[in-house]
Length: 169
Image (cartoon, rainbow, N blue to C red; front, side, top):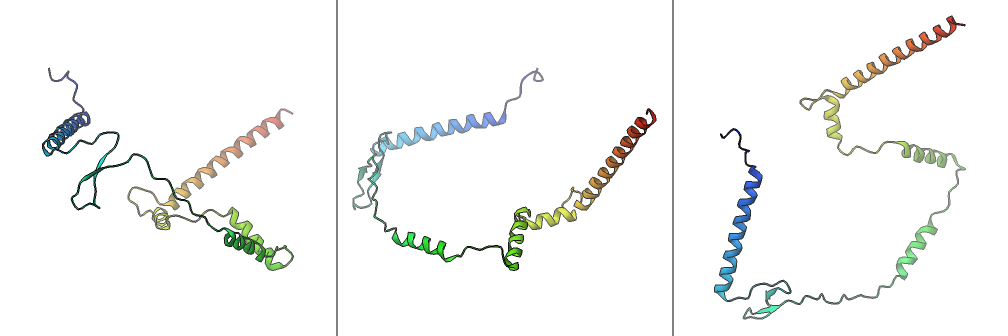
């Protein structure tokens, strides 16, 4: 009756196998640590090998971080540069024609869409070079035709409503 048995999940089987391998490796590590006579790493502090001492003896790592060292920074040059930058630019009014054009360019830039992040992809999409995708010009034509058909239906319905209202008057 193998038909009524639920199939085993391959992911959970693989996870179980990996967990057993991890347990075996941890047991081997503990066994090798005991054979070598090195103390096991405990949760309070790790034992590290000192590279400063030639014998390579282990030193207990301290769990406390050293105190941070703060240095005094003279902020006067930074503040002076900031004030020089702000005072160097004169206030502009929109009295000259060149400044008006600049203002219009800035205003137009606000409403302009952001630049394309991947223009090559846009070219592929527009040309229909990607297999399975229709060209963008075809999609635009379909959308335009759909809009014109719906607008025509709307005009016909509106004309019918107006004709009915005039007839009943």
